[in-house]
Image (cartoon, rainbow, N blue to C red):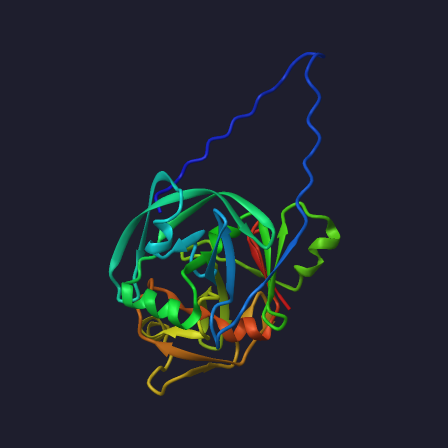
Length: 284
């Protein structure tokens, strides 16, 4: 996505006739959204745009806000933004598509204004399979939840959306071991993990059906991938031990240095809160 510069200015008012500051607008209440799971998959949620319900996969491994199948996107009233999204397909091909926006999206009773959307870059066969197997028509990514704490509860199969500035009582569900996010790379939600083989970088990804290592990058980190799945006995994040964990090894294109992804198995076994306003993850 092309960079968007945001410019801010401050105005200083002098004199006794200045208008009083407006009363602060209270944050909206938290919202709870049920989701479905079809096997070890992404949580499946439903959004509403223009009185149309659209089932999507929750994929926080994607930094986009909304990614929709072309047939769905073509039926919406959208506005061009002048920006574009560039990404890699699973086959390694680069694609670039324009970003548009819609004025209003609803999820769990919460209204999200001016939401950016781009077309899904997968091929027709992949999209047809996604629709047939899961009934979904695209993805909702990490960019959708800026300004919210996102609590993922796989056991009860719901997510809780807590707006920034919510009452302290509302924020208690976003708690646990604080896991910092790594800012030396721009792969999305990334954390540094200490293992018996040294430090590694992993991406948090609800779109992954499991714990996965990237074959080439794992080998570059001196991981023995010759015998199938790899077990890391130590998997420490910010001092807390989450190991041992067993990872499948996949051969797919990924940025150098990205050892793998933290997917379905971890979210199934832990309550995870992604605190977007404070740029961190909490696990319990």
